[in-house]
Length: 179
Image (tube, rainbow, N blue to C red; front, side, top):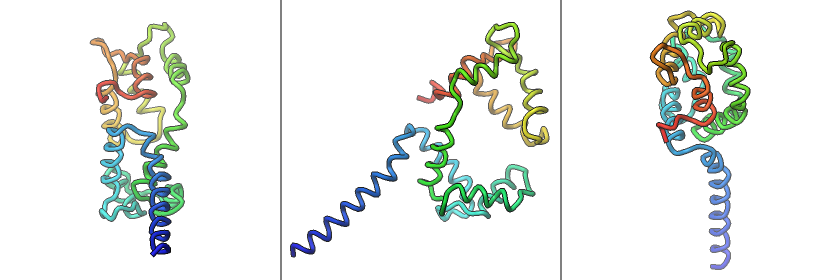
């Protein structure tokens, strides 16, 4: 009887340790962020098996309008997970990526290049043109919806000027309205 209890205690201890190890990634994010990541994971997990595989990635790209993604690119994405990409691994990957976000001052410095007068704003239309012509080589049809979505969350005055100081705060700290 004593050996049976010891065996049970050992399993419980191992389970607790595994939960602690995997739950650490959950402590990196707020509950609302975790919910958003769950929604994103569900969108990517096309076959709904709880694991993101190459066919899931290919189908997700296809739905976004990019139909010819090189196999090597898909393989590289999957290899970042160092094994099957379930939700916990997915969250861990985002935690690692977001951990390397530029500091607020670095982002502000980048915006200041587009604000020679130092007013703290950049013109929406000029900035949009830069995003569409200088960023990744996507067609306007591919990236225009994402640019418009970003502008919907961007602090702007009535003249169409982006308050980039507030935007930088949102990028580095999150949107206060969500909290």
